[in-house]
Length: 397
Length: 157
Image (cartoon, each protein chain N blue to C red):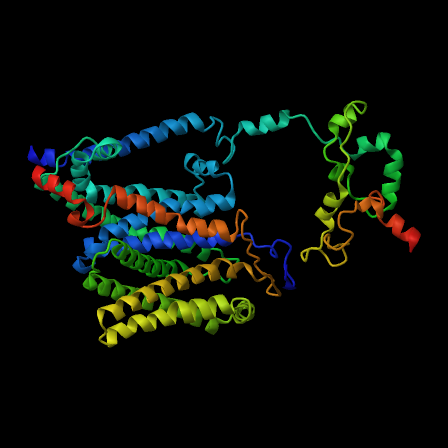
């Protein structure tokens, strides 16, 4: 353990590990993916329609995994249910369980069900065996897909999305609030923290859906909808610019204010966090993707070049936002509250809170998403089904 | 009528959610102990249950009654303030029936480093060692009698 200067006894070993970095990263992807989906539904950005359902399923796949890093970190996952049974109303962390449940059940699951209801009813009629049983259960016994019933779904889905936008902002703003409200830690304590978390969530979520859309289209050997891709990339650029501006505003405020913690934090940024914050987060993970996305706006480029740039910028944005979460969570624990010493974070590999479980948890939403796309295909109907089934469906209609 | 029929599936989903809420309320009634919240955010009966538990620690006065020679030795050393059961563990059963309940022999190579492994959070003057370099695997009492750790060193210095 490399400790420099003086640390209080409870500071030299970090209490929050990489799993607590993974947790806000995953919830950010959820919130960002949902906001992208809402662009089509609420703000009528028709160009992003091909990603609407994919964004919803992505949000659900990541949301199902979101509590796992916390449960692995804390141990005794069975106790997390007690948070619902005997809620501690003065604990921000305990109340987050209700924010999570609200977002999962009242927003995401409901919106997906309403949007897919027509498909679920049709699939319950076309499929056989266990798949039929699942779809029949999902219809809840109603097979009414008349124009009037679908209009009701559309209206109800719109209302759920309208409620869902502040809920998505609450979900990730709440994560930022948990850090921002720790007044004893000057690295975290900032009223801007929830806002920065919301916009960084939107950046990571939009980038993730962009990459998943590109990858799934490539796997299915379909043509990318370049109008959709260009629009998503443009929204990625806008949200990234706002996110970066807010972070810079926070930085300028800290530099100008220069309170008693400033020398300590400044030293940390120039030494222990230089690689993860200055190099990875700002240069590689923010300025470079911003330059790439900006380049497409000012120079007319061919479709292939644009695709490559978007894939590159999206990947770098995901790296940059992960670095931002790392710098918040790990960076906030590297210095002493006495401002007289610094510690280091030693990342283990195959331990309960090591790199390996963190990687596995990051990858876990992808097979879940694969399963969800098999159950509820997000692609246009003609693409999603085998030719025989498609013909049968047309005949039955 | 059509309007009712077209919105019927929304009532079904509302019913599913309603059943979920009812199931949760019933589960809560079954799982949350009745005495929860009686005195604070915990199970009120826990106080009486804790009070009923038999003590597992005997206390150092009980140890001193039989092991007065060890107590006298310990009193002169730097471990004078460390009570017997801090290292030997709870010994109430042994104190009440010394003949049949024997304390386990301690693995000092693992036990002593709990306090004496180098740790930057400990005061600099506190005796600390790096267990990987300081005679690894050797029981500490080979050189340091635990009841008066400096005795051996002072005799051989």
